[in-house]
Image 1 (cartoon, rainbow, N blue to C red):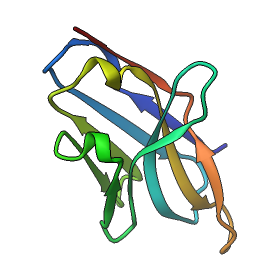
Image 2: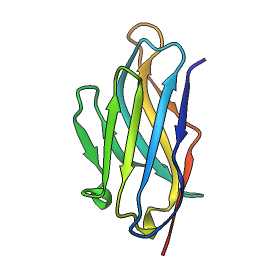
Image 3: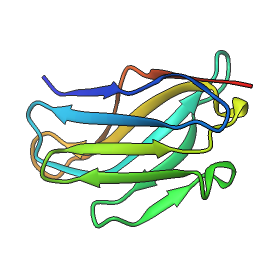
Length: 120
């Protein structure tokens, strides 16, 4: 069964760093884009950063210069290095992968989420 398992969230003071990791496991034919989204209670999930299979990246304006997304295609993992964190970065962060289990049909898959809390 396919799973996206996240790790690395936690509590950190403003200005500190965290590193989020996400590993896709199970039957996987191919993985296209991977990314991280954030979601506060009662709000819509929003994109933080995404990376294509070839390594092209996009970032939310508020995190540019502070967060870096990377991936390891051989290990089916995506990582979000979070530096100079701010209290407004506090949220639940979800890993996302657009992948095909069998053949070319691509679907969205999500991790369970990991809490990031930044204290002032």
